[in-house]
Picture 1: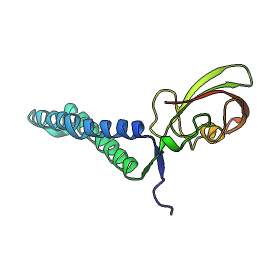
Picture 2: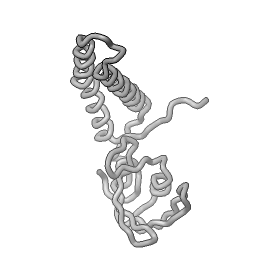
Picture 3: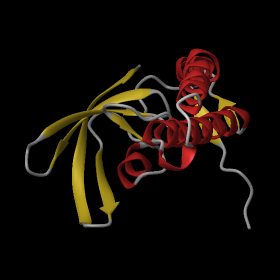
Picture 4: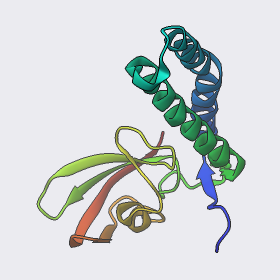
Length: 155
């Protein structure tokens, strides 16, 4: 069995995770505890849908808190000053064009979110280390495809 996976994060990505964790451990946790207390006051818990919904929400919340804590604990902060600005790495925003001419902009990030691509994903692995003008081959589960790196910038 292998140990925890090391995640590379920029300072901004680490701060975003820490901010989400603070929100979940503070106001969100307090709200869920209050919802459970209120639902309990309604009596019979075996048929109390409000109570069961609040307990489910608490379970999801606590699982997310555990995941964020582990992510932050097992992460390595990337020194962005040492990264080449024209080479794709964690924290890069990359514009690519696939072999059909479709353009796509992605951010290389372990944090996730809209437009984020994990450095461990097929596209992320293909892009990391590439530079503007490079053509990369993406080995995806649905088949291989090629993309050209149009631009690389820091997030």
